[in-house]
Length: 105
Image 1 (cartoon, rainbow, N blue to C red):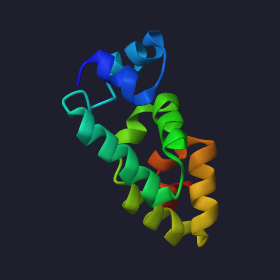
Image 2: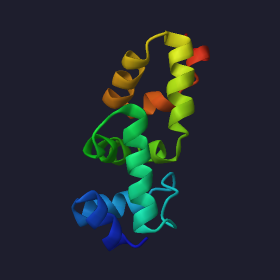
Image 3: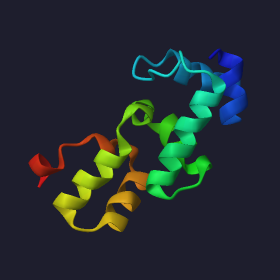
């Protein structure tokens, strides 16, 4: 994927796309546009979010794109016993997805 593809997929300004593309924690530069769109759709399905919400989460916290989101939700739900609350917390604060929730609690 090239910078212009990222701009088209995310529908963002060049400066935002450049910052994401250059982020060392964004590991999806080698994906095709179709693969990246599929990734966004897969994440949206796990959380039951819009693709716009997923894009916003990735822009806010680039490592978010690389998580195993089914595992994140499953493990968060095991700790907090409320899947809806886990998904809501991640939407509000994407880095929450990367925490070791057992250790946090």
